[in-house]
Image 1 (spheres, rainbow, N blue to C red):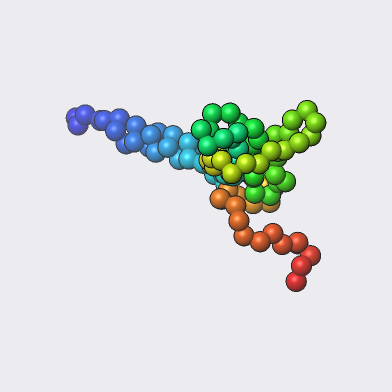
Image 2 (image 1 turned 90 degrees about the vertical axis):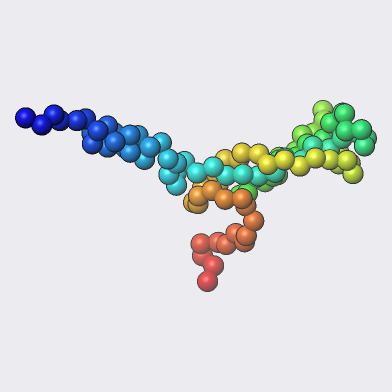
Length: 102
């Protein structure tokens, strides 16, 4: 009698696990930009920050008086954002259009 192997079942389970671990449209990751503004060209002290996420208003780091500081010395890095409703991921940009627009 030939010996039966478990390879087909093992391969099927592995393929199912991989398929379930892949992101779907609902799990898409959206990205935006974070700007950190520094006091001087030495870039040691952050004096202001801004996060821009597609589909949302910009978020500013304000001091206790409500002031937002922008300087010529800044860094920009990509950050993860909540995805806007009604669409998948992406890197932002493009034109937003109203549903009622022709």
